[in-house]
Image (cartoon, rainbow, N blue to C red; front, side):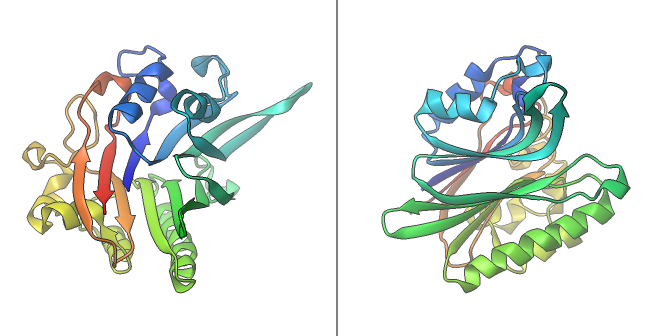
Length: 254
């Protein structure tokens, strides 16, 4: 199983070019089976040519897909809403999927959501959670608590669980520990704690940084997995770094 998490910045690269083809090329090159995407547009605006980006990428890559809006804006005189959020691409059928909107209106913060889905690989269902957590510390804790409640429910039902996305938190922080009390940080499992601790938030020599893409010194994009999963490989994909302001993270297990 090869799993990729990638904040695609609505397909607009650091060179300000809008090219979904670059995103598709990166995903295809690493032969990912399951892909969690953040900052995905769906008929949002001219910035992304009003594309349904998840559907476009799924068709291009020959994958199943599901989109979970974090922001949904009605358009006057048009049935299609302008939407922005998270997406899942999968080579395996998506049995069920739903979106959970997170950020309450009274914080006047950017809307956030959790995409929850079950994919079917043979006779082994896998529960996937894709999210993009708030920059606001209070909201971030609240959103992580909601995510962990959902994820632990899945584990109690005997499912293998994967949490992935842009968590906007430091390795070894208190919020990171909230997650790793229940799930393994796939990067640390593959590379050891010396390569995944708080220093990897800003030190380039750990090779774990995913942001900013031109000089990746912060580790804020994560894949967390159930404790029984044995991760054999974790790699930040540092090619075509101009495609987004984040780099994607690839994890593999057998």
